[in-house]
Image (cartoon, rainbow over the protein chains, first blue to last red):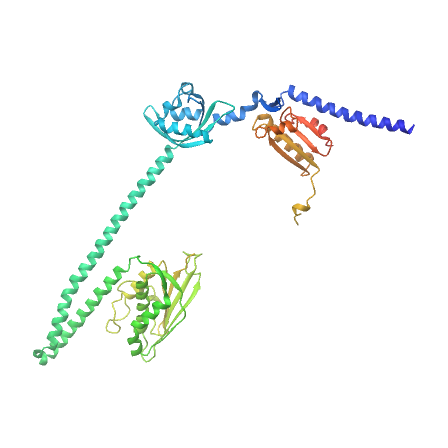
Length: 420
Length: 100
């Protein structure tokens, strides 16, 4: 009895399984009948072949038809079998007039296209050619794909390069315009430098004569009794001397613009050289100079030597009467200089002295040519030294600033950008 | 929330293969329809592999396909096959044996 029940259960579950199998099979048939599929798989001698049904290629066809590039198929002999709207618009020839004609009849250099076609053996063949329709030339990029073995034809994608060509030409034009301007500028600069040399030579020549002859007169025995005239001659002499050094400084200032000869420069060595040059005046006024270890930077050795020479000479010159000058040079790495360069970091090198100092109002003025705060009788110089320093710092893509207050000494900060 | 490392992740209950024929319209619908059914009934407890038969025709032999698109449920057993664009949800749920 129990066995019978088990058998019934088994049969029932088999029945349920068969029912669902049948339902599954029925749904397969329904799907084929009802058009729910796009392709049938048929085994031909053990080789699966896909037979696409009517709607199946719709997506592809629409994609090619509306494609933003020219798309066509050509036979192996080059007859156009199909082309999309874009290609017809590009050539300005209606589609029905294109199909059936030879693609090569729209190509400017048939040889080039032939070469691309020959390359097809290796797979996809790409290259630039020029189309020629009714004497209108269109530069295009073509990409050929063999449709073998399914179809004895070639798929061609055509990309219009006219806009790109035009941009390239525009850029080339701007480039050559710029180059012309740069050449002009360089020529102007050269002429200016020559002008400076000539002018300085022409000014210095008569000044030297004034100096020489005034000196002769001063020492001449005839002048022994003429003390007033000798004094006047001395004034002439010293003025001429100032004029001479002024011209020299101005020439130096105008020639510090050159950016040539940037190399790695060890600032320790630069300072060593500068101190050697200034050794006599340092000893003469018993100045103490303390220098921290300084970094190496990329720059012009000549200009950097000039820079530190000017700054130290200034510190020595503007010393406080009755005090031994003390100059300290320090170095650190800093990242906050100004708002314009928020993420850059700099070598900050400070030249600090215990000299006469100056009022805050003057701190910006001192870097401008010919700005001087003192009478020439008090402190010698032409008011060009700091302007040269500023120019040198600009040449090194850095900056210079000053801190000071009267009687408290001055600090000149140099900021050299650190490159990564 | 702590992420479970991949190796310790639990295997999904359901595993499906969907065979399609490129970008053909029924194949696209089948992919969409399956997605919405799966999102509604399976959460993320399933694995789906979509296979383009145009790229590997031999697979059609291996899985004895007669048309495309075809959805095959590999897990849990028994294997079930549905042909068509999966637009009839009731039918799909019944054949796949997913209880509402």
